[in-house]
Image 1 (cartoon, one colour):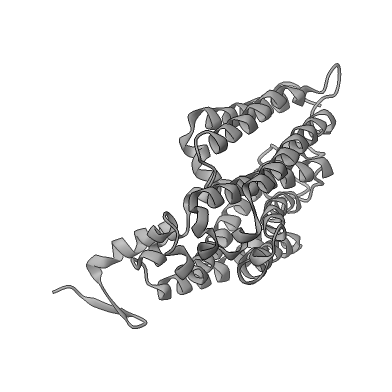
Image 2 (spheres, one colour; image 1 turned 90 degrees about the horizontal axis):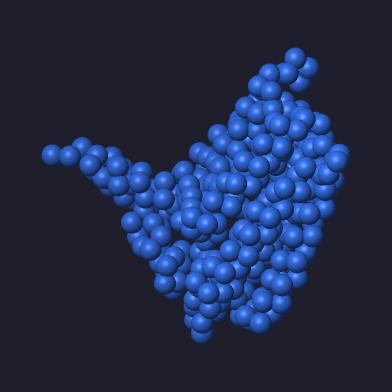
Length: 322
């Protein structure tokens, strides 16, 4: 006979543990951890070259500390995803795709989600302090959790336009966190690029939800009633042009790369333009855009442009020292 353990009012057999853990990991959305790669931006675009693995003055390896910051944001983001799914459990059941999520489908107990989210938050705070005893990184992480996990989940996601801006702010906070954990300055132009990129992805996601749900959009997410496809298309056009210009200026002015005879990071601009146009193609002609993280993983041309962009940045920094 299988041994039984109690979890709230639920009895879980020992043979059910693997299924529960698998569903919990799914609810934590590891595919979306790719968003936390924004913490590495400071290494590529800061005013100092910090690729070395050890620095006698600032202590433990900057690169390793940024990797630690990436892990911390993955933990915090997963806790927020769990809380958000628990709050939206009934609304998700009205969504053609989200109704298959672990909580909405009933495959995972809400009690498990509450316990897991609590453990993640309690664990990540000491980790943030270890990474940066000066507590600047901890302050950014706490701000991220407060804004994304509570203000957005319970209030701001119901405020038109502000809901998209708040989601975009999460990406900016990731970039700031990557800078403060190693104690460097990050260029304002790069922060603007990340804000615009996040708006680009957020608008695309809202448009996908609106077209996918059509007349039932309001039942799933009340805020969708405040948007229309033509309005989102106008916003997308503005942001698309802005992000290409802002990234070009960032590449031209990046202090980490040589500026003579030409700003060498301008070599990365074609990859950015292609990735943006490819994403627009997937939104408008393929009907995708609801999960940008999944698109990057499954669309080879889009993934290839991102990889080539990263390799080009790395090549410029290594082959053309400033």
